[in-house]
Image 1 (tube, rainbow, N blue to C red):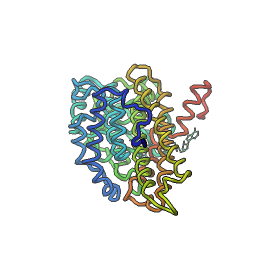
Image 2: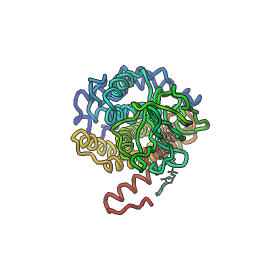
Image 3: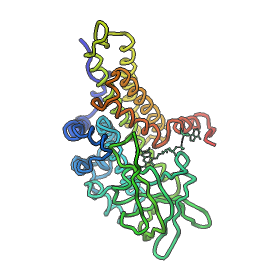
Image 4: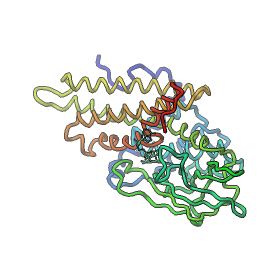
Length: 392
Ligand SMILES: Cc1cc2nc3c(=O)[nH]c(=O)nc-3n(C[C@H](O)[C@H](O)[C@H](O)COP(=O)(O)OP(=O)(O)OC[C@H]3O[C@@H](n4cnc5c(N)ncnc54)[C@H](O)[C@@H]3O)c2cc1C
């Protein structure tokens, strides 16, 4: 009997009924409502904003946060599986949910006042408000410690000045979580601030000319003497480590999401190889093509096992950021390589958007870079196992 599918090690048996159900809901949503539109969105360079309320209705925004804030209160395996299914559709779709959940709702939940939580979390969960996360700056990507955006204490609040770049959802967001340096007790500390879109001196500009993440909004945020009230400071933020805690959450979702993109490419390549006849038989019958397909499924299987264990560590409160680094680094790297091999198996057809492969391949170039490049995660793990930092 031939094996068909992408669950070679029967991971399905380790999932609870609820986890399987949530995953299947996400899969159906992507197949029925998202995939029919993604080709056009990617061509036009537009994000399907009208689908955002559906993400809220399905409980996919802030889904691990508690019900008292209008969230689904699910575990991290369910969250991972949903990320996988969303990215099986497109990295841009998964990114929307990741940013809203891990980079906006998580910091408000973890570092926010009770008023901030009560006001923003239910709205963000229902998708009545969209959020973005501004850490990266034009001159500070891998090294956010150097960021230049500044918050200065002023009557009743703070005045922000600076520029953030490469911000997902930036120009469609109702609220931005912005990381800025604040002078306190004679020294600079990085703190998180909430900035509503209406604030005077807060400008947003969409970044044009992207060949990756075309079905996603990426923006520049500019703050020019932008005043915000005292209560917009996220009171629990205590330095760069607060921002990095958010990134650990988001990277967890990326580790799972990348598997989704890899599965989409593998399935497409397998199907194509079985029906494409060249020389005397389907190309799937040639050893070189089989070697590629076997490598793909092996790496997908390993990535699934890594992510499943990662989820269990997270749910058990034993997760270290370095665990997430390994899964993000590995899973995105293999997804990118799988997308390249799939593109190769599709031959010339692989460069057209009649197939999802080239779109995933282009997207994965971003996924490899953002939320810590592959190199930066390698350095993070290197520091963890040697005790020596090789960053500077
Ligand atoms: C589509 C998209 C969406 C994004 N969304 C967001 C968002 O919502 N919010 C946000 O804050 N940011 C966002 N980012 C920014 C992203 O996180 C950064 O691009 C990323 O951190 C890398 O920074 P950089 O682009 O400045 O690259 P750089 O830091 O300049 O790195 C360039 C190269 O140098 C290497 N390098 C850097 N330092 C070292 C070192 N010490 N040793 C060895 N190699 C090194 C890197 O690995 C990389 O290969 C997004 C980016 C993209 C493309």
